[in-house]
Image (cartoon, rainbow, N blue to C red; front, side, top):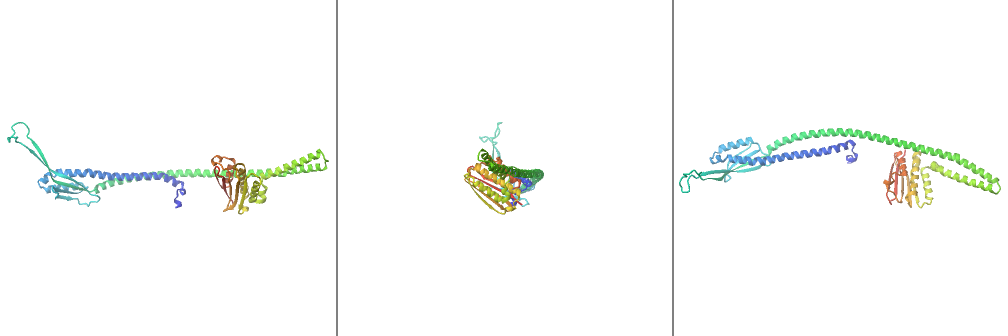
Length: 424
């Protein structure tokens, strides 16, 4: 079922779905409306034609019924049945509703039959030619007249919607064919549009991926160049500056040894103290520029030494460290990036988190170097801190090696940083 999920569809399939679904809905609505309209037309035509046929036949049957000319009446009925295929049967009844004449169509009816009935009226018109005194009218006044109406029979017309439905069905099929051709044309047009948009989107995505890959390669080169420059500076400080400071301290020690008690000896001791302080500062600067412990102890040992240093700094926050896996598989570039990321994360905890406890987990699992740094500090709003140079630098270092990073934090909720970087 997962392959039918929306997230597993291709871009072209999604575009086709977005385009075709409204078209399918409109087409279905059109078909339903056309079908219902044709049925309504059939019902309206039968409701209009049935009473009219019954009334006209009743009016024309008066003379035949009075004169008992049933053969003429049957001929009329048969002609009407042949002329109108929607009439299934016609019955002529007397006043007591006894069958006098009937005729039925040869075709067998299907569908719901409907019955329409009209009375056959006998109209008698009388004219009085005598006056009230019993004598004929002798004046120019018209004679009194009147009319008597009586029911002498009934006409019952049975109608079937089959013929009307057949005619309307043909019309509906023509409309359906026209609509299907239009729908097919729209689908083909949508396919071409989706194909063009998909090609354009794929080209844009390829360009973005290439740009992203180029950016990552550039970041890796920059990081490598920065680390190389740091190593060069560290070597110069270690080999040149520290060697010079050692020489200065030794010369000052000789001066102090050969000088009697007094100002010269005190100045020599001051020079020794200053040289030793500068030497220690240089050593600390060398460790920051290029952690020698990373080369001597490996990544896990160097990170453990860093955590021990932060834990002993009496900052009010206790640090825990846990490591698992074979760190000898981690290449030098990944190791230095991971070391710098941990360095930045621990520095942020000390400077900003106001935490009382922090933990660091380092592991080599499933071909990845995984790190988790968490604390119980104040946390921060990710939207406000997303542009911080420290977090940006951490993300860029991770993305440069095709890694993943997630930051789970919130105000007063502490912070948890999860990082995974692939190793060879």
